[in-house]
Every structure is written in C-alpha cells, then in structure tokens.
Image (cartoon, rainbow, N blue to C red; front, side, top):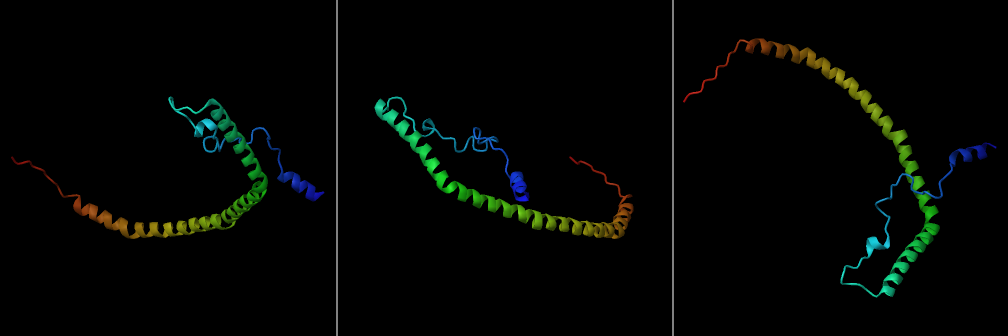
Length: 143
C-alpha cells in the first residue's frame, strides 16, 4: 500500500496531445520540408520529383524520430533523470551549504572590517578634514 501511494505521488497526468506545453522546442527543432529545402523561381524540379521529395522527407523524418525515440528514449530519459538528480543533490547538499557558510563567514569578517575602519580610519580622515578645511583655493585665468 505504501509503495503504491509513493508511486502515485511520483507520477502525474501528462498531456499526450500537447507534448511541449512550455514551448521549449518551438524555434529549435520544429523543422518542416519548407524550412530545409526550397527551389527559387526559375529553378524547379519536376512536379512529381518535388512531391516525392516532400513525402520522402516528411515520412522518413517522422519514422526515424519514432524509431530513435522507441530505442533510445527510455535510456536517455534515465540518464537525464540521473544527471538532474545528481545536480539537484549537489546543489542541495553541497552548493547551498557552502554559500550559506561563506555568507556567515563574510558577515563576521565584515563586522571586523567595519570595526577597524571606524576605529582607525574615521579619526584619521576626520583629522585630515580639519587640517585641510582652512585651505582656500583660488583659480585665476591669465591671458
């Protein structure tokens, strides 16, 4: 019962009609015959050759994709799932703790730096400001 419940939580309904709901492949791999092969005016093949080329391109692309996805789809999905699981694992268990540790350490160092600046630099620059506050600069343009 618990295994069945676990598997039900991992699976979700998928849309078998719209298989690219976020349109991540809209401009990249949507390639039709007209996008690849075109004959300019004045250079046309025979109509029968053109129709046969269109059919050959379309059918071979369709079936080649289906055969490749049938053979390699599940193993490649397994590899990608494994890769993204490893990336997620590293991000959750290594990257974020390192970043958080770094932020904690830099916060401590920034307090020490701020204390040093206020202790040593503020009096120095205040004294320099008082020394040079009486200096007057006059600019004259000589012709």
